[in-house]
Length: 308
Ligand code: PMV
Image (cartoon, rainbow, N blue to C red; front, side, top):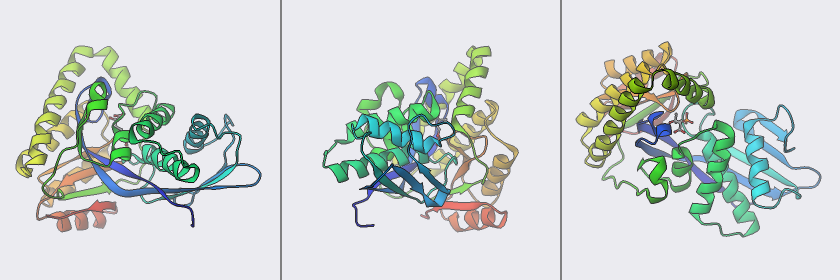
């Protein structure tokens, strides 16, 4: 535990997932203190440990059956020109994997920062973000880049892929009253994005219309978020969830969770991230306790919670 920790945020998408892959706007806020990583020189071969996820594997580039996290480490070591050396990489993961919360990008950023601290490279954030994006391509195929942006900068953003380098953080006057709960079922981003791509290809006009609507919601939602106009933001989140259901990335369980949240006073509730499992986010001014308690009672894990 003596080595300095590389840290990274997770993320919660409030509006715009999937549309983001088609160059539309996406609105997201950080999940602070999500991942910490430490790197120390080792004898023999390199090893990756993520105790919270049950990962304890040698880092052998290209080995069949390696986890995505090991592939990420191998790519980072290659890009930082330390592939020939040996390290123990220890990751403290405080958010679950495959729950739509940007864990894979956060792992990448925290590990890059841990190598940076260990080796004294002094990498700037843009370089870290770019390398984490390469890691995301490995994991997801065609990522929008929102996850690595949030993991690196840890600021609320309205993001598009084509203007990524010019993204400016949104200044919030208060922490929005959000409840994030996970279904406990893994959502595999790569598969969900591929499913949407398939349906997009066979129904392009319809899907373009839906993505344009989502784009407008994200842009308007960023103003509502900045102004703490939760009535407006909540209804935009509800409408966005309807679109996500329409493009077939919701599940009966996510629908149930969204329903419980709304029933208990959420102004807005929707799936967050790629769907097909994963998590929901609910906007609940003055009702966060009620919403979290109801979701917990129904058997779901509360990941984050903040009240107004
Ligand atoms: O499920 P996550 O946390 O990887 O979020 C994915 C968000 C998508 O819009 C579905 C994909 C992307 O790259 O933007």
